[in-house]
Length: 124
Image 1 (cartoon, helix red, strand yellow):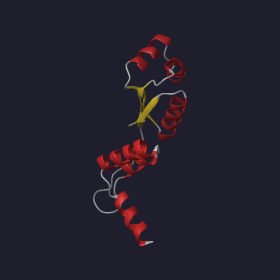
Image 2 (tube, rainbow, N blue to C red):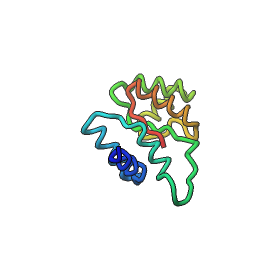
Image 3 (tube, rainbow, N blue to C red):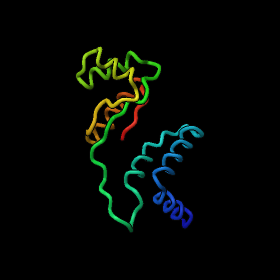
């Protein structure tokens, strides 16, 4: 049991750079999409030091359209209210912000919908 507590302590004290490296390893070597890695990075280390505020606004960034570009363009058009030409431009110019300063729940929902359409999305 002590080993798990030590492991948990190590995870909590990871730097943002280390969390990103861990996420890359989990994704590339084990095929695991570590959605919780961002939460650990935002929360920061527990105890001691200055208390940091949790992030409340997120930007939904389209990194790449993926294999189904047309479906992604249609979805971006629907989600943003842009015209077809503007939505296509946003997708073509990836990485680009689909929506900015949205709540965590809305950002997660947008990310989920875009990933289902085949896009590569990131929250900042």
